[in-house]
Image 1 (cartoon, one colour):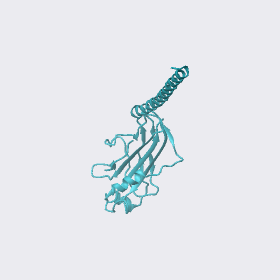
Image 2 (cartoon, rainbow, N blue to C red):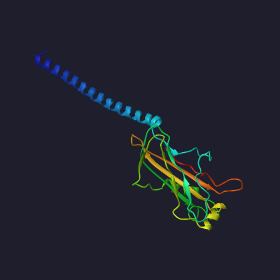
Image 3 (cartoon, rainbow, N blue to C red):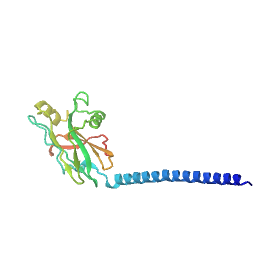
Image 4 (cartoon, rainbow, N blue to C red):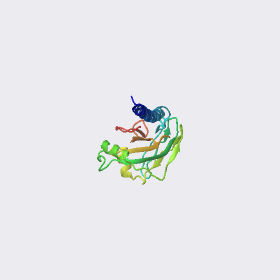
Length: 214
């Protein structure tokens, strides 16, 4: 075998080896990026499960003795409510926006006989617009006051109809917030006024609709 052929053959082997090393390095780089990404993904998932913020209503809704959401609705007064939010999670909730709105049944969301189109109510709650200018940070264990009142004073006709069960007063709420990984979370709530009856004061109960808690 001539010297030139031998040199060419060795050069070809070196080229193939270099190409293999380059390919292996490229693959290693891709795997490295993948493993870093996967590690961050796993950290994110673990964070969501163990350390993420969880905002909900500040009471177990099954126990009506812990909070009086509504006072008795009376003519000549505004309808007032108290329904605070609490961060039950293990980290701060960031950029928190919340809104509570009173809905009265009537044309378009139920009938004047007290029946309610709960799908319409659910849609109204889930599409409540958030006030962009009001946001806050809610630390774990911290409570965000959720009190408010109707825009107008209740007249005698509405007060009588609501307390007779012919018209419903429904309080719907929505809170949107973010965790430290900038994942968006949302919680909705819905309760309705229960008129005072024989042997019991004015109270409230949960609405028969599906709420969001993510």
